[in-house]
Each structure stands twice: as structure tokens, then as C-alpha cells.
Image (cartoon, rainbow, N blue to C red; front, side, top):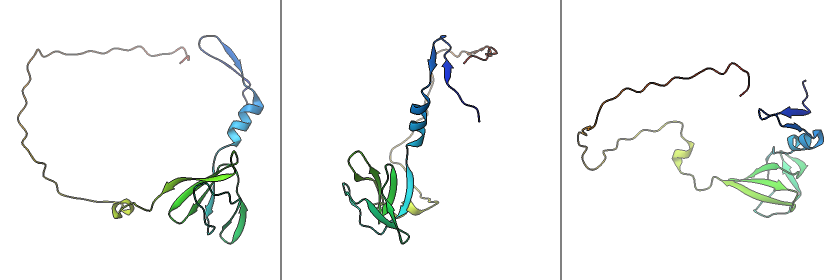
Length: 132
């Protein structure tokens, strides 16, 4: 796999990339832990949840579903935070297709154009330098 330690911008400025910082940034993120039977609420500090009969430790960025709610765990305050709730979604939220007939109120007039007709020409030049 190719690795990069430096980048040169079109302006000529060269920046060194801190490998440890870049790797740390890439390693953080989210991961789906699963659907839990452990009761979770916004702000809950439960650190062990049950998923599929197994106990899992909450990890930073870990996402779990409990009932109709989605939660993400943060180690900055060691708590779960609600990020979604499907409780109040209507029947249409679970459909793949829908159709309806609607007649708008009012009338539509035939618009007219006033002014001068004109043609527009656009030209461009391909960038073959390899610099973008």
C-alpha cells in the first residue's frame, strides 16, 4: 500500500503529514454494536449492554439500537446519546412505493416572454497540466 508523508499544494506550499495524528483520526469513528435488550436512554451511563445474548462493553462511537431508538456512546462523558427515534414515523415511512392523485387549487395562465432572443456560447480549455 502506498503511504504519504508530505503533500505539495499548487501554491508550492509543502506540508508534512503527522503519521500518528492521521492514523488516530482514521481509527476513530463509529461501529454498530447491534440491537440491545439493555434499556438505554439519552444520558444513560450503562457501560455493558446485552446484544444477541452476549455482553458487550460500550466503546467510543459504538452505536446500539434499543426499541425504536438509536444511541451512540461517548467516552468524553461516558454516556449514551440518542441520535435517532423511529417512534412517530407514519405508515408511509415503511413503504417502497406510494401513489396519490392531487388537483391543485387555482389556475395556470399561459405565460408570455418579452425581450430579445439571443444565443449563448460557452467555450473552455482542457487542463492538461495535471494540476487541479
